[in-house]
Image (tube, rainbow, N blue to C red):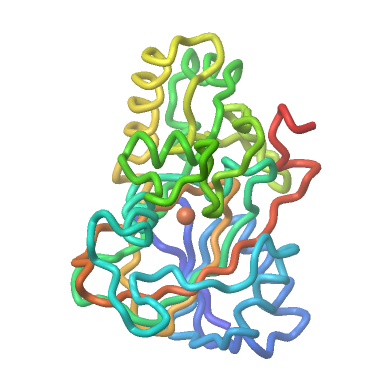
Length: 286
Ligand SMILES: [Fe+2]
């Protein structure tokens, strides 16, 4: 197996000359340890099968859910492109920087993501290093964020961006994934990575109502922090080729999709790896 680190960022490695569906024990061990160190591993043209992708994800932890399509292509081949279409709203919401499932009681550990149908333009996936972002804050700001927590909610992020589903229950709730009935999840703005023990920011579009701030103050503060954290020097954007696969560490990295022409088909496969309840459970769910 050949490993090449991405040079522009402090995270990310490209791994080639490996068969992800037939890993040796030694290779599995190397990949897991590299993942904790580099947070994003890219396997060009790995062409994982459905079972192969889920099995690979299981190397890192239990699954929050097995492989699903993140796509504007419906089952019958119908292309979802109307801005008011609920499928389109979910995809457009993903254009904002976020960690996956921070709005669920247990945030995701990571995800395996692979490309099936790739548009000619746009539809790149970007990742941003929240460890480097924390380290780039001045000492005063590091001390400040260490004392703060924020609520994470999909109602908040999709609501703020105008992407709430059309289909709503009589009691105001939604049935789509992520709109859970419980209280919004409270999480510290600084997460200590359970393996490396290094601190990183845990922020993004789902985070709101920072403790000890008014809603307005909080929104302004978080917008500034998100913008600073996701500065270009701390990001990497991947231009997909069909069959490319990646695995990322959702405890440390944020990610987003770049806009693409929604009349063009794009299909990605996503397997979400469940967080560990000991280290990824929200403060108010303990
Ligand atoms: Fe996501």
